[in-house]
Amino acid sequence: MTYVEGFVVAVPTANKEAYRKHAADAAHLFKEFGVARMVECWGDDVPDGKVNDFKGAVQAKDDETVVFSWFEYPDKATRDAANAKMMSDPRMAEMGGDMPFDGKRMIIGGFDSIIDDRAAGSTGYVDGYVVPVPEGNKEAYRALSQKASEVFRDYGATRVVEAWADDVPDGKVTDYSRAAHKKDGEAIVYSWVEWPDKDARTKGWEKMMTDERMKHDPDDTPFDGTRMIYGGFAPIVEA
Image (cartoon, rainbow, N blue to C red; front, side):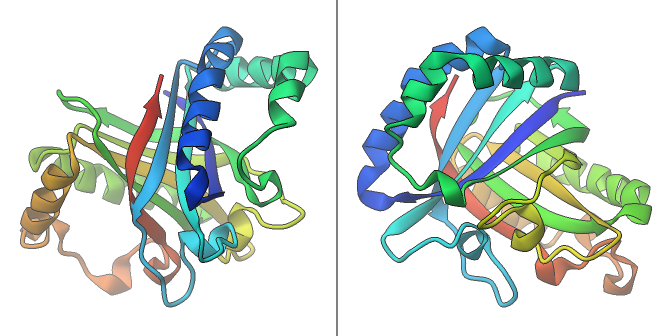
């Protein structure tokens, strides 16, 4: 199954093109290190939450936009080897010296996919999620997500990925645990749904909201939905 390095970062909205170029220029380097796929998604429909949200996760300012992005690896060993190369390569140090965002507020972690379902079609829009799940509910969460994945793909999604926390460090300023208000005994899930475009995503959600398969007893949900953070993102780099 795919191993995921997931990122969330706040970028000055005025720096969108600089950020896109920064990421695109680095793509060949990451590929050299072993990254199988790199996707950078610019915040498009990122709502405020009652408890927490993507903006709060990275302490985004009024003039900043949230970016949801990830690297895909064939396995953890490849990811670990890639990170070791990145840490020692002088090109990475040079690139890090001119970043168009505040790296101190970037949250990062390694996640092991528990669902990776694909359908035909390209990626033109992404729904991104971060949610805390009790560790003992891992299988129940996977089973529920598997059912939802089928519905997503029936209504136009091209891919559904659910990835369970494996190497998610604490940060000095912010991190995934603080972003999701994680409690003791919980794990972080980083997940996304790919769509052909925003219109397909909108129409897909309209159909899913009335699908009986998406209805379930809220008292039997294996996670606290009030602490799920989510948003819609438009890809600006895919390599």
